[in-house]
Length: 95
Image (cartoon, rainbow, N blue to C red; front, side):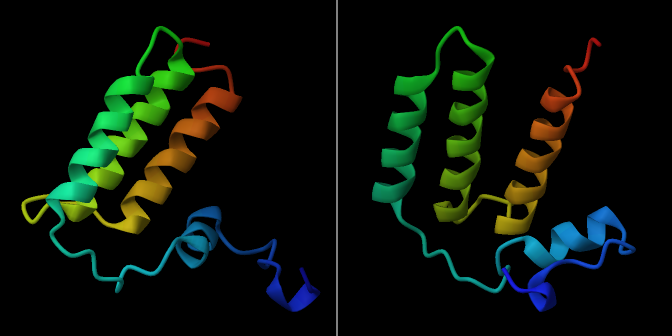
């Protein structure tokens, strides 16, 4: 990564996240096959560990991109995942 590609350290973290988040103008066509495949995988990996539940939840959120009634965007998914990972890195909600 060149110096020109690095975020400005003075910039607010949320602004940097928006710059790094995927393009929200991307079109995600209604695809029952993709939606169901993602949800089946999410169901398979859901388990006792918090990590497996988190990945399962992420896959469900991504599957909503292919649902005409879904109300999410790549940015929302990215920011939500980043937020969850930040909380986990700080020791969780009950620290």
